[in-house]
Image (cartoon, chains in turn green, purple):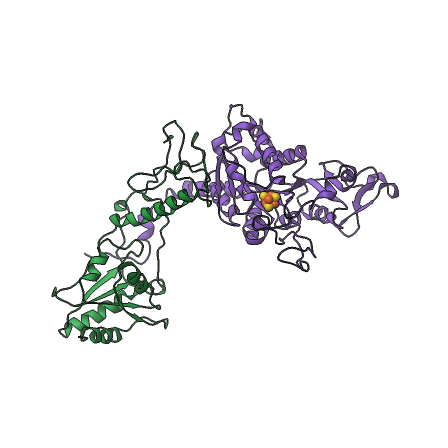
Length: 225
Length: 351
Ligand code: SF4
């Protein structure tokens, strides 16, 4: 709501079909959702500029029907960056595409940094996951550590934008393993964004990874010279 | 069956009134209109802009919702609130808006492609639910924006870019479709007849619940003269069956409409029948059968085309029912308690 952007929550079949105890939130402690609708003109001449963005968040003002003086039109055709008029100007389109990207990128300020679990502090290998593989990866990491191996683990909760420290985390390990139940979608993004040659482990059998299977993969990577 | 409460039309009774004396120019936006020269959309836009002041509704309480297509650029050219929304989904967005904001006059602008192809389902469900919205379907019988492919209302055999040896599709009759979906208000009008168009818009706005208006619209670029038989001044009056509630159904001086004995209607020479066998138009019949039979009179093509209000009946309006249901549930059970709801299942406390 603060950034006026749709958010896509990637869920997981196992979340839908599984069950585990869950702490219910205290409703009173949930943050209040305040859309902060525009009620006054925001332009210098008393006009309403529906595409004039908040300097900080780059979010546009929202005025709802019924608000006199703020009547405006929105829609899929490119709009002028300030007035919201239909605009076919190449430079304006370039500016708008960059602005929309900058808005999403800046959300990284509001998401927590990626936390890494590296109990000995000197692991060479990082295993990085996202989504429903958390349980299998954590179980595999536990096995490695129990048998005296060293491995760092991190799990992404946000994919776009990524946490601000992700690049630094990736570069601080010799090797990064990315297990995914697809053909390497996160690996592709990490390589493209950070030029880090992550090692993918990919299977699409419609079943979760087994802890021992993943532990074997990690052991093999840890033992590489 | 428009009931008015004082001077307020039933369809607008929850919408605030204004004393502002609007003029047509107050509803023009400053955007450059980008339809092709001669497009029928210009005439519809001009008629709509000059009609809006009659509504007596504050400009900020009018919302135009469109999908995708030539017709769907309509909202940009009006100074009201507007959204050029998702292909075919304007009725769904308008349903949400009308249900949550009974104080708005909500208009959907769509076309034969947007409304009857990709949006066919959204359209019929909005009509059957009888949401308080007004749907204007500009029918040019062609895909204009994508440069001339056959649409769900193109005639069989039509040669287009996507049907080089003729379309095989049987077309929709939009009025029959709306009646089949049990729309409570169904009308047809023509882009070039401003007076008729305006009177139909007025009746649609006054109607509580979903109003469906098919507007025959000429696309001079990709389907020119599609409705020419209805525009030629000499032939027009012999072909247009102007529906007036309570008046006999007549086409020009010589022809009229009688029951065919099988629940349908047929056009006959008035001289061959008794004058009182001519059907008197009744837009308020609760059963849609008669209006449906009327809608089938447009065959053979353009021989006799009914225009005007086919059907205008009262039945419960979705958004009113919804808000009533919420109020009653609140009155009976009090305000909801989210915390209690969350804790109502299989929950326990860990100390
Ligand atoms: S393509 Fe046809 S319907 Fe579209 S703007 Fe041009 S004339 Fe009008």
